[in-house]
Image (tube, rainbow, N blue to C red; front, side, top):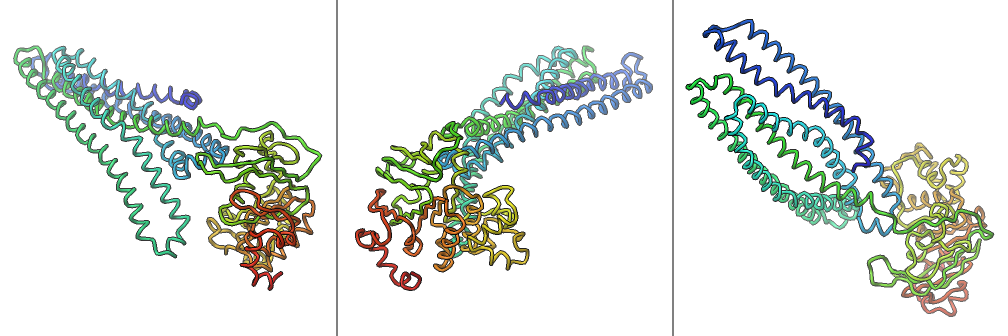
Length: 578
């Protein structure tokens, strides 16, 4: 954490200096009050004759001290917030930057809900911890030890009374904090779970309503929230016990001081003003202790949250960057050499001994039953995951040797689940190529068969897309995503079932336009329909994670039983649009 604190240490030091000034003003006032009572009101040094001039003088002095202390307190707050907010700002940026560098396995391991909690709630807790530490630690320590020091200076007997109670107070604090500390980490984990449920339910609200599962999700969220409240109540109950216990102990101290003071006043060794000052110092000590309780609570939560934030900050990408950024003789060649793959943490092998070469400019389709490894295979090309065994080569270079950004600039992907942003359609398409001209965007949209419905919209390409593309149909979202991949002008185009929501005619027009506008690009098409793949140069049929057959439509229809089964099941559609 020091890495972030030292950058704003000057703000923290200035805040600490102002806090010292504020607390000193508080500590000086009880002695002035004692002098006002003893000398100004009771006239202890003048035979019982009050001194109005002294009362006014000391009273104005107290008012000045209060005003100066208030100014110090205000400036302390300013510099404390400058320290805490800037530290939190830097941490959030670093966490987000780190998350953007995460590999897919790391994203899967942390989970989206947990990452949201860490970047928002956890960093806020760390920010509060730093602010409270800078402000609270100085104030509480000065109030506590300053009150005891001034108490001894005022009357040694009163000081000893307070000092004897101190170990009991510390014991109560230690007991309660030892019970509460383990609960803070649990609280943050439960917040993770609530955020995960919220994220799932908000993104899947249409399915929830379509399946009439609102009640189930309400119960699921309610259970998670009840667990959070239960843990929070445990923490609050512990501190609810601690505050009255400390208060009761301090009131006992006040009672003993009053009893001892009455005896000393009778013997002339103490004055009423001294007793009033002693009670004030005892009250300040009590305030310091109660502030210490809150401070320790914030420190405990902050340390627990810092541990979770640090997990993100200290995480190194699982996929290490290579150094290759140069050009090659080949443009768009892909080769799989004895490739096997299993997802991290899973014993199930998804791909087994894949050997396949895709030549530059070739259109290769990949078909197979659900779960046979089609998407897993193409995810190895841009190195979203690393092959468990074997090598994946792009343009003759192992993908592990590439700088990941350089590798992914060669590749453009359109997914079945279209991810759109809350921005105009123009900007969503231009994500594929920042700085793309209006003509490049329009040409990509025409190729993707999206220009028609875009131009028909009231604002055309400036039409704002709702969150997660909710204002568009499935086919429209897919076509905008395809346009985004086309505008990039990449050497390798991957369509991962990205035309599943298109009718067969629109899909056929898309592939015809793509062949005309991007003839040199290597195209990989994952699809479920024969109509989507029959015109490909080659069709790869996967079965059980292995290549069952590879050839043209005509070759496979004669020799591959798996392909024949798919063809037979879709014969009606093929006859109509083939």
